Amino acid sequence: MSAESRGRVRVEQSAKRVRVVFGGRVIADSTRPLLVWEVPYYPMYYLPRADVQTDVLVPGSGTRPSPSRGEGRLFHVKVGDREAADAALDYPDSPLEQVQDHIRFDWAAMDAWFEEDEEIFTHPRNPYTRLDILASARRVRVEVDGVTVADSTSPRLLFETGLPTRYYLPKTDVRLDLLESSEKVTHCPYKGTTEYFSVRVGERLHPDLAWSYSTPLPESQKIAGLVCFSDEHVDVYVDGVLQERPKTPFS
Image 1 (cartoon, rainbow, N blue to C red):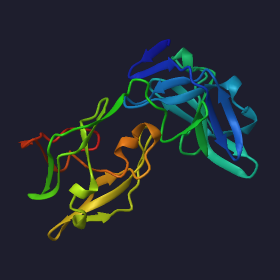
Image 2 (cartoon, rainbow, N blue to C red; image 1 turned 90 degrees about the vertical axis):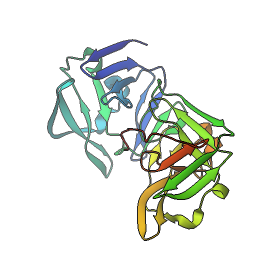
Image 3 (cartoon, helix red, strand yellow; image 1 turned 45 degrees about the horizontal axis):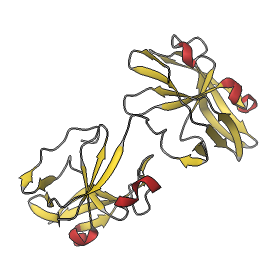
Image 4 (cartoon, rainbow, N blue to C red; image 1 turned 180 degrees about the vertical axis):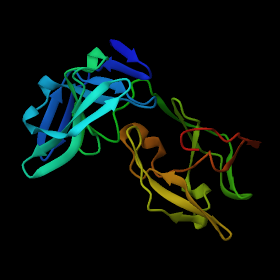
């Protein structure tokens, strides 16, 4: 896997087949996509222009400069009556030579993305991220404002590269009477779509403090239906030892 870097941006060749769907049409189909880390946490796909149905690209509102990638040209993506404004761009004169003659599509503006024959969500999977879910006999107790909201001796511990250990607990070990369903929804390319819960302790409501994956993706089935609390905002005791609240992008 060849790589090129400029500043914080890293570029690598991927071996996966990637397809992009918009307006009921496959508008890109490539077996030589690039993974481009525009931010440190996860990459985006850049697809060779030769593998893109360029008739769907209409000149957009202008350009979008990037300190690392150069001057980006914006395009609208149009299929029939469907149009996504400024949903694609390229960097024809980029100092990162690998991304020249490649198209970057706005992830959320497209209808669907596929790696090989599996639909993927949120963003491409990071090849350097590993996710392990292990059954444990450790006792995990969670407090909010000094009130125990969960206490379990059969947690599932989720270890994900770059993130703190997450403790997923059976609902039978959680004070469900203190949880209130939230409208918040998030998506993870490794675990799936969450449902969130706020926690009410006394008169105080702590919004979006816990979450659960009722139908996780196949690689994360071990946490199906379990509840996880945001370690950044609650007190977690593991075998009686209070854990330090982690510092993460979600703090």
